Length: 143
Image (cartoon, rainbow, N blue to C red; front, side):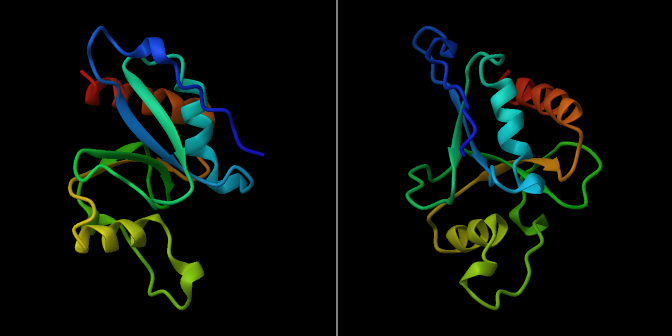
Protein backbone atom coordinates (compact mmCIF):
# COMPACT_ATOMS: atom_id res chain seq x y z
CA UNK A 1 0.00 0.00 0.00
CA UNK A 2 1.79 3.11 -1.22
CA UNK A 3 1.03 6.55 0.13
CA UNK A 4 -0.27 9.04 -2.39
CA UNK A 5 2.18 11.91 -2.65
CA UNK A 6 0.46 14.55 -4.75
CA UNK A 7 2.51 16.00 -7.57
CA UNK A 8 0.81 19.29 -8.19
CA UNK A 9 1.76 20.64 -11.59
CA UNK A 10 0.43 24.14 -10.90
CA UNK A 11 3.04 24.56 -8.16
CA UNK A 12 5.62 25.41 -10.79
CA UNK A 13 5.87 29.17 -11.21
CA UNK A 14 5.69 30.60 -14.73
CA UNK A 15 8.65 29.24 -16.65
CA UNK A 16 10.39 28.14 -13.46
CA UNK A 17 11.52 24.71 -12.37
CA UNK A 18 10.12 22.95 -9.35
CA UNK A 19 12.54 21.89 -6.65
CA UNK A 20 12.39 18.09 -6.68
CA UNK A 21 12.62 16.27 -3.37
CA UNK A 22 13.14 12.51 -3.55
CA UNK A 23 11.35 10.90 -0.63
CA UNK A 24 12.64 7.62 0.78
CA UNK A 25 10.87 5.24 3.11
CA UNK A 26 8.83 2.11 3.37
CA UNK A 27 5.08 2.76 3.73
CA UNK A 28 4.62 -0.66 5.34
CA UNK A 29 7.08 -0.06 8.19
CA UNK A 30 5.83 2.33 10.87
CA UNK A 31 9.26 3.70 11.79
CA UNK A 32 10.29 4.16 8.16
CA UNK A 33 7.28 5.88 6.59
CA UNK A 34 7.41 9.26 8.33
CA UNK A 35 9.13 11.08 5.44
CA UNK A 36 6.47 9.74 3.07
CA UNK A 37 3.71 10.97 5.38
CA UNK A 38 5.34 14.41 5.66
CA UNK A 39 5.61 14.66 1.86
CA UNK A 40 1.98 13.65 1.54
CA UNK A 41 0.96 16.46 3.92
CA UNK A 42 3.14 19.07 2.24
CA UNK A 43 2.60 18.01 -1.38
CA UNK A 44 -0.14 20.47 -2.23
CA UNK A 45 0.85 23.06 0.36
CA UNK A 46 4.29 24.12 -0.87
CA UNK A 47 4.53 26.03 -4.14
CA UNK A 48 7.48 25.27 -6.38
CA UNK A 49 8.32 21.97 -4.68
CA UNK A 50 7.65 18.52 -6.14
CA UNK A 51 7.94 15.32 -4.09
CA UNK A 52 8.78 11.98 -5.68
CA UNK A 53 8.65 8.70 -3.77
CA UNK A 54 11.66 6.46 -4.37
CA UNK A 55 12.37 2.88 -3.35
CA UNK A 56 16.08 3.12 -4.07
CA UNK A 57 18.51 5.35 -5.91
CA UNK A 58 18.58 3.12 -8.99
CA UNK A 59 18.38 5.21 -12.12
CA UNK A 60 19.02 8.56 -10.43
CA UNK A 61 19.76 11.00 -13.24
CA UNK A 62 20.81 14.09 -11.29
CA UNK A 63 24.51 14.29 -10.62
CA UNK A 64 24.40 17.30 -8.32
CA UNK A 65 21.84 19.34 -6.47
CA UNK A 66 20.06 16.20 -5.31
CA UNK A 67 17.60 16.59 -2.42
CA UNK A 68 16.39 13.57 -0.47
CA UNK A 69 13.99 13.43 2.47
CA UNK A 70 14.21 10.45 4.83
CA UNK A 71 14.05 9.51 8.50
CA UNK A 72 17.22 9.34 10.59
CA UNK A 73 18.12 8.05 14.02
CA UNK A 74 19.71 10.22 16.71
CA UNK A 75 18.25 13.60 15.73
CA UNK A 76 16.39 16.03 17.98
CA UNK A 77 14.78 18.03 15.13
CA UNK A 78 14.46 18.10 11.34
CA UNK A 79 17.89 18.92 9.89
CA UNK A 80 19.54 19.53 6.54
CA UNK A 81 22.53 17.21 6.18
CA UNK A 82 24.93 18.39 3.48
CA UNK A 83 27.99 16.27 4.27
CA UNK A 84 27.69 12.56 3.46
CA UNK A 85 30.51 11.83 5.91
CA UNK A 86 28.09 12.70 8.73
CA UNK A 87 25.88 9.76 7.77
CA UNK A 88 26.55 6.72 9.89
CA UNK A 89 26.68 3.40 8.14
CA UNK A 90 27.18 -0.10 9.43
CA UNK A 91 29.50 -2.68 7.93
CA UNK A 92 27.30 -4.64 5.51
CA UNK A 93 27.11 -8.38 6.02
CA UNK A 94 24.80 -9.01 3.08
CA UNK A 95 23.05 -7.08 0.34
CA UNK A 96 20.12 -6.55 2.70
CA UNK A 97 22.29 -4.33 4.90
CA UNK A 98 22.59 -1.55 2.33
CA UNK A 99 20.55 1.42 3.52
CA UNK A 100 20.18 4.85 1.93
CA UNK A 101 23.31 6.21 3.64
CA UNK A 102 25.45 3.35 2.37
CA UNK A 103 23.98 3.62 -1.12
CA UNK A 104 24.60 7.39 -1.26
CA UNK A 105 28.20 7.05 -0.10
CA UNK A 106 28.86 4.33 -2.66
CA UNK A 107 27.26 6.27 -5.53
CA UNK A 108 29.19 9.39 -4.51
CA UNK A 109 32.47 7.46 -4.47
CA UNK A 110 31.70 6.07 -7.93
CA UNK A 111 30.95 9.58 -9.23
CA UNK A 112 27.30 8.75 -9.91
CA UNK A 113 26.01 11.52 -7.61
CA UNK A 114 27.60 14.82 -6.71
CA UNK A 115 26.30 17.23 -4.10
CA UNK A 116 23.50 15.67 -2.05
CA UNK A 117 21.40 17.37 0.60
CA UNK A 118 19.27 15.30 2.94
CA UNK A 119 16.23 16.60 4.77
CA UNK A 120 16.57 14.31 7.77
CA UNK A 121 13.53 13.76 9.97
CA UNK A 122 13.98 12.21 13.40
CA UNK A 123 12.61 8.67 13.47
CA UNK A 124 9.45 8.32 15.57
CA UNK A 125 8.94 12.10 15.59
CA UNK A 126 5.33 13.36 15.86
CA UNK A 127 3.95 13.83 12.33
CA UNK A 128 2.62 17.34 13.00
CA UNK A 129 5.97 18.57 14.33
CA UNK A 130 7.88 16.82 11.53
CA UNK A 131 5.67 18.43 8.88
CA UNK A 132 5.98 21.90 10.44
CA UNK A 133 9.77 21.73 10.72
CA UNK A 134 10.19 20.20 7.25
CA UNK A 135 7.94 22.88 5.76
CA UNK A 136 10.00 25.67 7.35
CA UNK A 137 13.25 24.11 6.14
CA UNK A 138 11.94 23.54 2.60
CA UNK A 139 10.70 27.14 2.38
CA UNK A 140 14.23 28.32 3.27
CA UNK A 141 15.80 26.01 0.69
CA UNK A 142 13.38 27.09 -2.03
CA UNK A 143 13.56 30.84 -1.28
